[in-house]
Image (cartoon, rainbow, N blue to C red; front, side):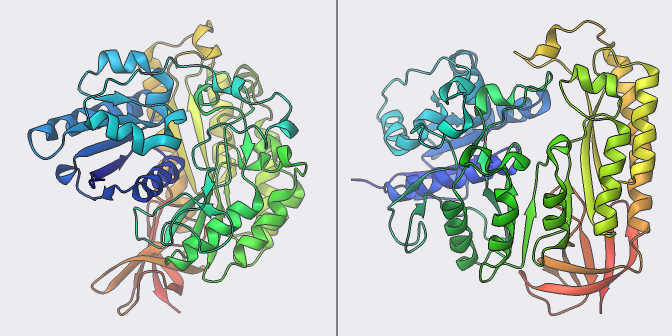
Amino acid sequence: MSEHSVAIVTLGCARNEVDSEELAGRLHADGFRLVDDPAAAETVVVNTCGFVEQAKKDSIDSLLAAADLKAGAARSVVAVGCLAERYGAELAAELPEADAVLSFDDYDDIGQRLRAVLDGAAHVTHTPRDRRRLLPVAPSARPTHGGSMPGHAVADLPAGVAPASGPRAVRRRLDAGPVAPLKLASGCDRRCSFCAIPTFRGAFLSRRPADVLNEARWLAERGVRELFLVSENSTSYGKDLGDLRLLETLLPALAGVDGIERVRVSSLQPAEMRPSLVEVIAGTPGVAPYFDLSFQHASPTVLRRMRRFGSGASFLELVAAIRERAPAAGIRSNVIVGFPGETDEDLAALMSFLAQAGLDVVGVFGYSDEDGTEAASFDGKLPPDEVADRVELVTTMVENLVAQRAEDRVGERVDVLVESVSGAALEGRAAHQGPDVDGTTAVRATGGQVGEVVPARVVASEGADLVAEPT
């Protein structure tokens, strides 16, 4: 069997990164040669994002850029991931530059699919379906569903692709850095009126703790020092396994894996937070006191139209409870402004909450209709110019608040996980800084190594970024 070369281009969130590494593991085990440079590959696999309009555009642009490589070594371009799953045959019809548009259901046989494309076989693209319907309604019946779920696979693969013993994760690292995402679960059972993700990612399904721990050990053996736990809703972990507090048990076990310095949890739902989970995240050695809380808004009226729970007052109580347990904890969130029906009073309630909460980082997004969502049919839509004005107003306020929060950390002691070394500076992240979106910390020092944890004291800040000196 001839060896074909393949490059994987990943867009979107850390969950997609895990899925790409699963595809890489499957392809490597099936005899494909993985290359970093798409220009040097026979097949370019683009793992797309289908979350919001800009992400869709970036995915299309990446597919077109990959298609341009056909003048060189590339013979085929294949679309996978959320955009491919969400639009299927429609995307294939509108983007003939892609030789195939694959579904999540094709991942188990990805090598066979790519070989067929290279051989010139026509791929029959899937018609999208609501993937929530693929799993039983009762969460307790889901673990034995037997269907395809990206990032959940275990198999008996060759050494070097997965752990040496026990159930082996189907994964091959595409990034040699000291931080790696680790999937806790997939899908979501919430019905937020603005969000289409559950329709193409499916209902909520936890990975079994043994599989998560085995993969954590495998990552640690390959130099990973921080595990970034990802899912659509981490607070629901374990509900389909009979224990809604399973995350409180799993986190200390992951922190105890040899070689792991830090475990970080993402995607926490404020309405599902419980005191025991706050206690474990805030007080367990090796677990970052880091709370990625999806507030989305603070006006009770807007939150109800979003099909969400809570209020600015209840959110402030949660923030206070976290800071009472861990004053230096990192708390980040995203908010949507310009939601249908949002009044000036609603916007003022959001801004008042943000001013009082003092969050470390806030992502501000303007509302736009998403295909297939309930909110797309709502009345009370604001003109796009008005939405843009509100985004600018809240963003300006947030930038000032975030800068002030970072400045308040001057004098604070931090442990910085080094991710790059350049001259007289080490750059990495403190415990309150998540990957990619929460700023970085530069340590004024020489001689450090990537993957090392450097104790330091913050001496300056710029925006969300910090400057520190080793203690």
